[in-house]
Length: 101
Ligand code: FES
Image (cartoon, rainbow, N blue to C red; front, side, top):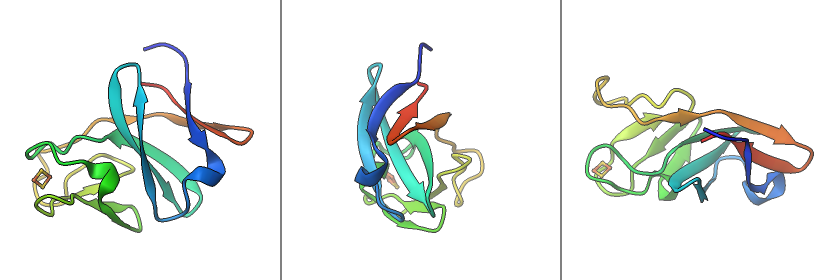
């Protein structure tokens, strides 16, 4: 782990949406939940689907491949509590979203 890295501008991730960003060789999905940003691994723990391309409702993203759902604030899978994706700390600095990964 190094420093917080800028992944996008705050205006680039609208509420209820996500972007995919590379940080230190990791591919992350960054979500805007009602104005608060959250970052998790982009890779679904089921079979590697891109969570950053899934539908978002409240704080839940649905994997576009087979529909597993994850809480983007905790990384927990709603279907299988043993399956979890990594969550990364996010800080907003001015107009920048930054992530520690
Ligand atoms: S790869 Fe995400 S639900 Fe199957």
